[in-house]
Amino acid sequence: MKVLLKRFFAQQSGATAVEYALMAAMITVVLVAAFGPLTTALTGVLQTVANAFPQTLPSQ
Image (cartoon, rainbow, N blue to C red; front, side, top):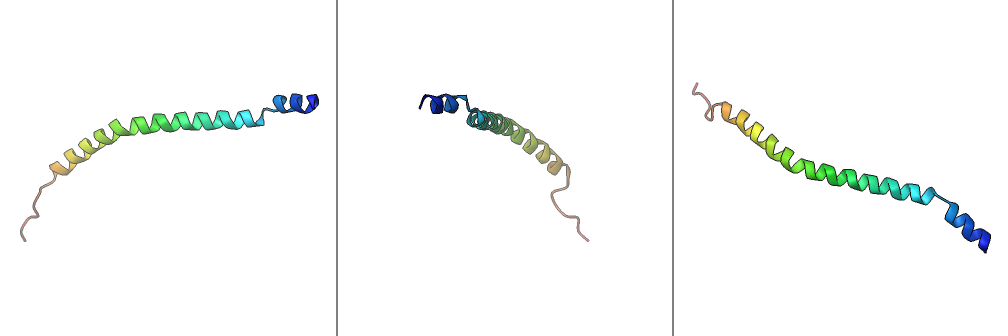
C-alpha cells in the first residue's frame, strides 16, 4: 500500500493538465476583459466611417 501511495503522489500528469486548464482560463478572462473596450472603440470608428457617407441616395 505504501508503494502505491508513493507512486500516486509521484505521478505528475494530472498536475500538468490542471496547470494547462488554469492557463487557458486566465487567458480567457484576459481576452473577455479586453474585448469590452475594444468593442466600444471599434463601434466608434465604424460609426465615424458610416457618418462620412451620404445618408440619402442621389436621385437619378
